[in-house]
Length: 42
Image 1 (cartoon, rainbow, N blue to C red):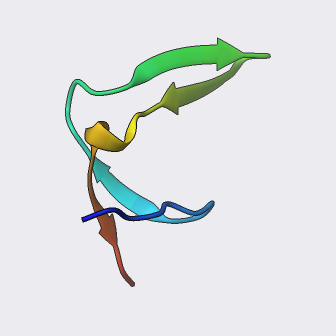
Image 2: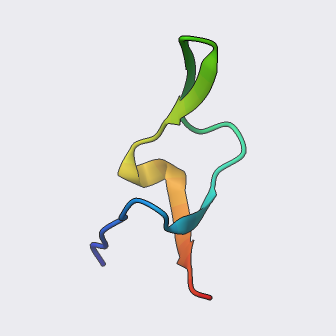
């Protein structure tokens, strides 16, 4: 089932998924849709 992730969404990701990068001393994690396990609702 396809889903969309928006800025501000809280998600569960796989433990070893994604790629960590650092830009101007700020850390980011780049993920593919396969790394996202669920989108959490408040």
